[in-house]
Every structure is written in C-alpha cells, then in structure tokens.
Length: 602
Image (tube, rainbow, N blue to C red):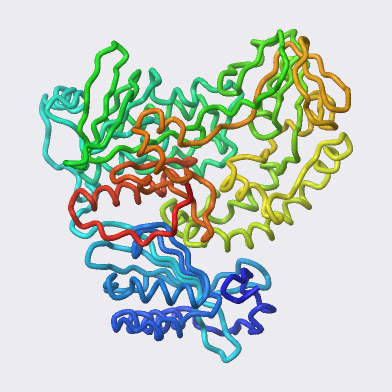
C-alpha cells in the first residue's frame, strides 16, 4: 500500500521520533501557525506542504470547499491546495490556544486551535503537530470548519431583539405561524430533532422557515415508539443547540421525556410548525428556481408554497420500514418495530423477533419483563458493547461530566477525519471488549454470535455505514444468557408456516406474533414519492461513507438545486444543522461559493 493511502496512528514507533519532554507547546504551535499563515497568504503550495507530514490528513467542513471533504497524503492535499488555496483567500489566522495532548501512552501531539477568515466566512481550525526525526514539528491532522458568515451573525447575545413588546406578541406569533403575509424561504419536511435544530439555526440567521410535521404533536416520533425506548447516548452527547438539558437531566433519556423536550424546544424558540400536515407534491420551477410544494393540512385544506429551499429532515428512519420477503402463509400477527407499542399488548402470546440489534433487544427485554415468551431470531452476528463499560471509554473526556463546553467538544470531535477516528476506535474498543469479556463469554456459551465491528472498530462505523448491526447493552444480554429471552440462530429461515416459522435444517418455531426489527429501506424512497421522476433519479445515495470517509449526500444538496437532506442523531443534528443553515443563508445572500465535491454515488 502506498503512503498516499496508508492509515496509521502517529505513535513513537510509527514516526520513529520521540516527543521531547521539555517542549514548549505554546511556542511550537505559534511558530508553526506563523509559518502556515505566511505560506497561505503567499499562495505558496510548496510552503504549506513543507509544514505537513507526508501522510497528513486535512478535513474541511464547508469552510474552503463548501462541502465535506477529507484529503489524505501529500499528493491529494497538494491537488486540493492547487485548486482552492488562491481562491479561498484565507486571512487573519490567529492562535486561540494550544496544549500538549496524550491520547495514548505511545502517542503525543501538540493540539492547536485557531481562528481564520476568508472573504465570506469566519472559520475555526484545529491542527495536531507531531515530532519528526530531525526535531521539527509537522501537522499530521488539520481541520478547517465553517463557523459563521461575515456580516451575517446570529441574532443571539448582543444581537438579540432589545425592543419591548407590549400586547402585540401573541398576534404577531399567530400571523408568523400561519404565514399570513407570504411564503417562507425554506420549507422543512419533518419535525424531529434534525428539523427543529435546522429551523432554529435558520430563524436566528434571519431566514424564514416552516416545518411540516405529519404527527399531531412535536415529539410524537419518539412519543409513539415502543414504550421501552430509551436513548443509549449519554446526556452530554445529546444537548440541543441554544437550550442545553438541565443539570438534573438523567444520563440516558427515556424516549417520552425527550419527546416532551422537543415540544418545549420548539415553543421556547418560537419555531413555525404545521402539525398534522403532509407534503403531497413538490416540483421545481425552472424559470425561477423555486420549489412549488403542496401541503395538505389535517382539516383537508391545501396550500401551495413557493420556496427557495426544500429540506427533507426525515431522520435515520426516514425510509420505509424494511420488511423481509418471507414466503409462506402465517395465520398470526406480523408487524414492524415501528408499529409496536408495548409488551403488554402481547401478554400470553409467543413472540418471535426477527433481528438482533438495538430495537430487537429493547423490545425483547420489555417482553421478558412482562412474562411474554419471546425469542430473538439472529440472522447474523451482532456487535455488543455494554453502556456501563463502553460509554465512559468512548465519550470521555469530551462528552462526559466535567468535559468542555458542548460547542468546543463538537469541534474537537469533528476535527478528526472519520477514517482516522477508526484507528482510535480500534484501540478503545479493544479495552471495552476486555471489560465486557464476562458478558460476551456468557453470550457465546448460549450460542449468541458477536463480532467486533469493522476491523475491530466497534459500533460507530456500523452506524456510519449501515445504521445498524449493533446493540449497546443495558440488560437484555443477561436475559439472553439466563434464558429469559430465547435465542434461535442455528439455521437460515426458509419461510412461514401457518403457526410460525420453519428453517432450512427442518426445525420450526411456533409463534403468535412475528415482529420485524429489521430497520429501514432506502432513505430516498419517501422523497421519490413526492418529486418528479427526473429529480428522483438524480438523488444520490444517502448515508454511508464515500472513499474519503465522509457521509454521503447528507447536510448538503441532493442532486438538484435547493433540495436538501438533514438527518442525524442528536449530536450530529446539533453540529451539522449550523452548516446547513449557513449554506442556505449564504445562498440567500448571494455569497455562496462553488462546491468542491467528491463524485456522488447513485
């Protein structure tokens, strides 16, 4: 493998260079940044590259490319600089802070944070410098990030509205919510966390927007899921922008509690939302470039909006439920996990759950606690990590008690290229596997099949690539070990019988209820139902990683101008909603540059 594609941690052994014990990290950082600033100002590509390790990584998040890009190795970074450096006009580079950081015993680098500007944007950057054999420090990782638009600040803090409002607010809000005086600039389909975060960001940038939500209440996406649903990410990872969770908030949030918080968030930030409403058609008007979007309200009335931007914020479950094609005729009940409500609905019945990831385990545990005869049918191996042992190791020190402010944690976390973060995850997950050894051994004894994720990297890359394949254990695994949850995984499924399931080895499994915990289909399907065929055909694949290790077709336009996709868990929605809002604001103001994009995948 050539050095251009070689992925490794810059440890003492790999660098063949020791980190000096008496190094003045602040001075090294300032000297490096001064040299970087001088070379950038002179558009000196060779001068910039001289400050980088040959196997360095550069990740840019919309600051210099108006896209999500990662370049690894001198050759790719050179091409990027040759294409973009002169036009970017990077200026006013200033050191924010620097420190010596020790991610592992054999890995030490100088981490420096800086601010910069271009003619259009305000940016933040992070570089990590490593020693070389000749004593110089060079950048091994660098990150440039779109933080703001010059001359277009958010309406927060000193930019908030200082004018008193005596008796007019209620009527004003009513007209705003009805859009009685005109159409919004942006129409957002979906009122989950990603839609709400984006709406809030846009509102505070002065971009009018309306959320169309099919549910009766904001939060129903979580409120109406199965009653046992609880977040497996810790609270420090899940804060929403502008209004963090209270200090008393539990570490792991019950779904119904989160639902109520989303409703509160929308009300507190005065977001404009039409609930019990659906988009029935959307087409782009070529002459004006606007989207004509037909919305049907709960009372059956319709309104056609003409908007500049149409954003689908349909979430990780935005696709249609994935229902496996199982031959045969079953006389019992079948349902997807999205339609399941509570274990008490099936007390006294035999339940088989097809699937062995998060939803399957959560639902099975709820059944077991209610005395229901439940069996998980595991079709392939599952990555298992306990939240008790895994979450502190993965989340500390950024997203844990005593960690940095959330915005700072987000910058540090996202400054690491995704494929590089895989190397870090492999080390952390090895420790987690050892800590979970007793539980994993117990699972193996009863025949449960596990894996360690892609190349031993745990659940993150399973989530990034396929949005599944793992279970973050909060108790169901012990129930499997103890036999409270039964397990079937010794033969491929052949089909239904009238009374259950039959398998290729001749075995059968009786059931009254078969529940599919099988995830979702193509995220593009709901969009294709609403847009013209030529637009639908141009939709690139949503989610998964491209060759650079960046998420595909999310947080930017979807093959057609003004058509966007916004999604993610609470952390990703919080972070990337700012970037989507700033892109839209830049287009509204006529200051958006040209995207420098990797080839899309269709």
